[in-house]
Length: 365
Image 1: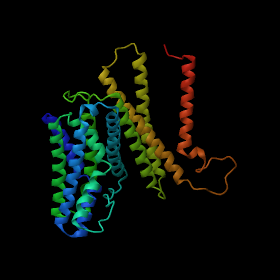
Image 2: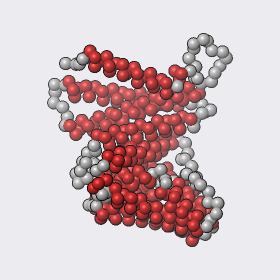
Image 3: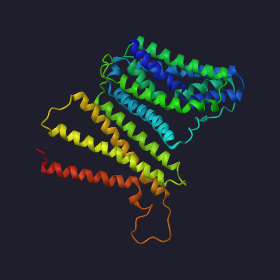
Image 4: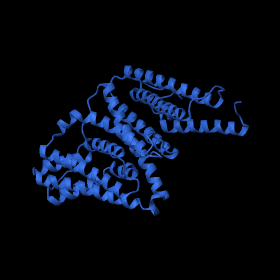
């Protein structure tokens, strides 16, 4: 592994470590329940062992018989999409909080209570909570696996970084007995920066040629990343809109609609650009620049769709039944107001349009 790759992996791992989550919550719960730093340090030891076990598992995945198998390829694509999903949710949630001027989310509460603050409960609890953290498996199967470059040296270096960072940070937490209220001051910033670094790390380690400063990700990984980003955007839209239930949102939905229109304009420009690329007689930009622009336009399209969905979903949520409805009149409980059947109709419409174009052999010359 080169020093640049180690540095990038270390920075991303650092911000992921300090970002509050189930593991930190368990350490704090153990410390609060036991009132003993010795027992709390055993939970830190369990976390370290969990990292070692995952690093050992990735070491076996590096074997040639497995490294080139379809199963590992599927796991890596899923990991890329899931990590982009997690990173995007963090970035989007922080942006929503900043824009809406709402308070930062409360740090994650313990997913399980430490009913008996014994040494074994602390150790095995730390091991299981960290090993089964939703972010841990894709982190090791994705960036960790790719960063090791299939070598024992890479596995040892990356594994040492992951174990060391977690052990040092959680040990400091135990020594200082950090309160969640103190961490909340920096939770929003750490969540945002961790998301940014993880997005970059995922793209960097899945690059076709890690030695090349330009990031060239495969088509399948790019699609997985876009799916992860799309799911993250929709998930945050639903969470943010539902959190506004019962409030006066009329001005907010107008602002959201304006932003959706602005992103839609960018998407239209992207469509015109793509059409120009196919039909334009003038010299075209470089292939690399074209791909980068299309990625920007695709992201813009996803955001525009999410904002439009947020506006419509929010307005329907605010709509209250008033008196009797006329027969066949649209109302918030009708199927037209449900995104699932409506989405099916939209997909069927576009599929029918494509089928007609394909049957007739339509083309632009």
